[in-house]
Image 1: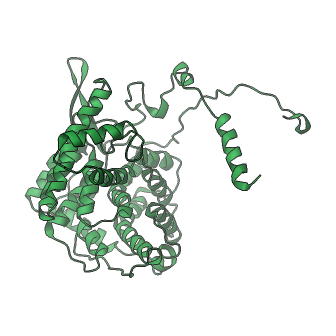
Image 2: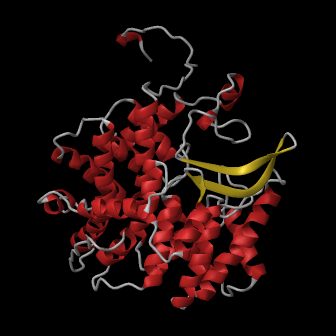
Amino acid sequence: MSEFSYINDLANKCVKNNNIEADQYVKYDVKRGLRDQAGKGVLTGLTEVSSIHGTKEEKGSQEYCDGELRYRGIDVRDLVEGITAEHRYGFEETIYLLLIGKLPTESELKEFTTLLAAYRTLPEGFVRDIIMHAPTGDLMNLLTRSVLSLYSYDKNANDTSIPNVMAQCLQLISVLPMITLYSYHSYNHFIKGHSLYINNPSHSRSMAENILLMLRRDKKYTELEARILDIALILHAEHGGGNNSTFTNHVVTSSGTDTYSAMAASLCSLKGPRHGGANIKVTQMFADIKEHIADWSDEEEITAYLEKILDKQAFDRKGLIYGIGHAVYTMSDPRATILKSQVEKLSVEKGRHDEFELYAKIEEIAPKMLYARQQGRKPVCANVDFYSGFLYSMLGIPEELITPLFAIARVAGWSAHRMEELINNGKIIRPAYMGVQPNGEYVSLTRRK
């Protein structure tokens, strides 16, 4: 038997001996995936970092409503509108809000951004020895490896006191864009054969500006590009304690481990196509849609092709319209709503407004189709992933960088939750699993079949 056949045989035996029947979950009232029968998340903790709502209570019953996302009690729409009205970059201010629990004063914000800028430096030889040592197109894995490697450069790596963890988190927030962009350029050079260039970040520019500066060979970008990327970072920075990567951070932090391990665990979670990797699927799906729909303004043609996708006859044949639907939001996702208006502005500047209109039409058509197929069980809406891929495409950000950009933003939220867990809990998170395997007897080796 060949090695492949043997491994395949082992895998088949594994599947056969690990198949728990679905009715077992019902019998023991197991909240599978930490969700109840209606799909609502089971309450497993408390947080002051952020809150999300897709329903509201009206006269004793839960009613669907437009989605709401609040950072430390502040509506994210108000946060974005306030920053935009004052014509400022706001991601750094958002980091402060999430970590500290309140909006900074002008002097506090200046001092904070100065510290973040000072932390924009990697250990000597890190780019050569770690990032370029084994380049890969899977940048999320390279990010994880790099974050774990930073442990070796930290003399106080295992110190979980709040001041030390605060310093570690701020350093990671500051260097993750550098690690991400340098990892991409390394992959682009050593694997794809393009010229290698490394642009150093600026201490006087915002995080969003530095991402574009480090990405592009000529270091040039428009103000609109940087402002919209800044808004995207704000919208991706945090999303409650129950999302997979943040919950992972709480679980790993509760074990008492170091900051680098906790952040690496979150990165591994975010990579998954059911979580942060979903935005890549949206990008790939739209590439397929644009290839197969001749008239982007023809709603009948669009609807017919979406039917094929849902019937598992087109795209990846999974029967999913990626970017539509969310575990919590029902009528609307506030992040998608905000991003949509910004994406439209950029589509005009980039001469791609016809493409934006295709997105907008599908956003209008797809939820109605899904609602009808689900027999009106629950309204669905476009989520933040729906427009983010198009935004990054217009910014010239390659597909390999889409999920890592999500990580660059979300590390702010992970940091806030890590410190909240350290400050408030003190117990390891240990959910219960019920053993349902029937009892067996030991059989001697010579009598086994």
